[in-house]
Image (cartoon, rainbow, N blue to C red; front, side, top):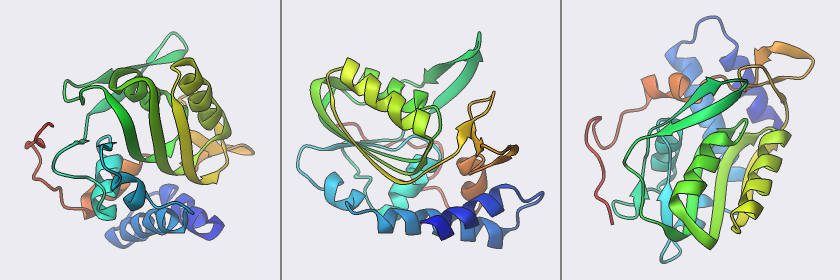
Length: 207
């Protein structure tokens, strides 16, 4: 895990990224998923499971992992916007109907606020949730745990690596070097070397 995260951080802080760098970054993320004690493929295959993989990195990684079904799978757009020292999350209309079992695949948990919005909108009280992510900050993981308790959800967080601190823009950075991001914008880094499937502009069928 540590070696893969070191590779991710090195690529994220390059002044200019080539395709070879982007491919190395993507493979390191996929390697981290492969090292998790519980595999996303297994959890997503349980009958009745709804899968959410937010655009772009969640959707790309979920497709590479083979966990995004044609039905009961959604790839919502979600954008963070700074508001009075905090964050507001905007989510597009392509959200699932409320579910009682959910698997979320995402690249990184920084503040955790985007996934909190998903939980708020997609789940019923008492639902069972598993989140798979390559990296999380400690504040982000704790915030998700507290929010799940508030919503009366059963939450399991599968995370490959926990480190870093949040900067003023709520990105994960090195605590002793706040100008050094740990992962950067994952979607910006991996999307140029990853074909979209289905082609951009088409949405998956809803269950």
